[in-house]
Length: 464
Image (cartoon, rainbow, N blue to C red; front, side, top):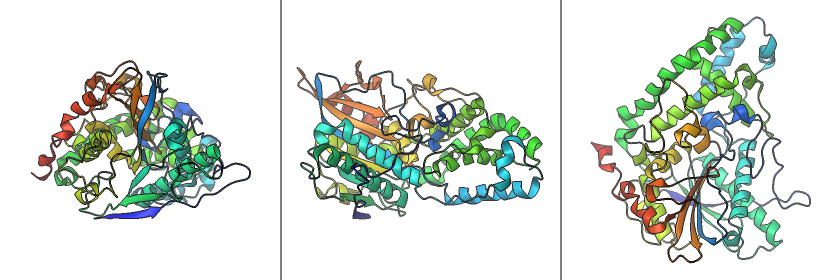
């Protein structure tokens, strides 16, 4: 079956408050990360969650009530991956061996030692997820005060821990709201269904089954797009760094030095901006953010022929939850889990799923979000900001602790429920199914518009 039921973290009370954490200096429950937003909101998928500007109010319309809410979340801020942490360390060692004099903004490097770990959730990342659970409770309090979500997580340790921290925040908000004996609550810690990421396991929260996508030429599309852009934007940065330091850095290593800004920032429990960040201009951070957006767009979104296909299984599970009907899918869904009401219950009003940035990107694409009618194909020779791309950038869609809300609304005078999709507080216009001024589509139209997923989304091409 490839799944394990686990429970969350033990609840902690600090002082007189029910909240189980100390807020980071630059981070807050509702606004997210706001320290130096002119640069920190342009770190691509390495940006900490921040509330994204929305053209449509995210408020629940006064004449409507929420009848269903599901969150799909990325894990919180983490250390670099094992391969990257080795490469970053080697780059720092190269600098220390080559540079004889550190001056100006580089002075901190004289005493800088690389101490970042690999793959693990940071304390800041844990706090992000606690905040996320609090925020979800606050938005959906009418339901959340009476109910507990059904919770799933992909099996990677940092994802499971993120789910646990989210439940901690959710429960803390409930206790604070309702007192020491929260109404309608199941036993805390809550159960979490963790789905294995082992090879060959069907898991809609983690790609890996589509062999043509994983092993074929489609996997090189993003790297090619990024290389063209990095050779353009990073070349003058490399020239400057090498002139100042004499470290003989490559283009790739130049980008590594930029990566060390967000990774050292989220390694700080308070999210204190790293001195690496001051080595680059605001314009260069916009260029870097775009570099990361190219990776996601051409890796897992509409820029890759099989990118959206990786999100089809989750979309069909979402349809099942929205319509209270069994899952109809032959792609990445785990049929053993999805046919069992214990591991895939229908009829619930609150759900929470935890995954990765690449998988969320594919799911958004399978839902028809950021499609070519709203998001022009990203060029790889110049920066196009998120506002001009229909709200698309890696930082706006899949930062650390990203979250998408799928909600159903029952509105006065209407027989049929509506659906809204909100990504990091930005309401999606849902033009593809006739979204109105509130960003709502009728449930039937929303589902009808998901023909790509319902028809298999090109899954047959995965094994050609």
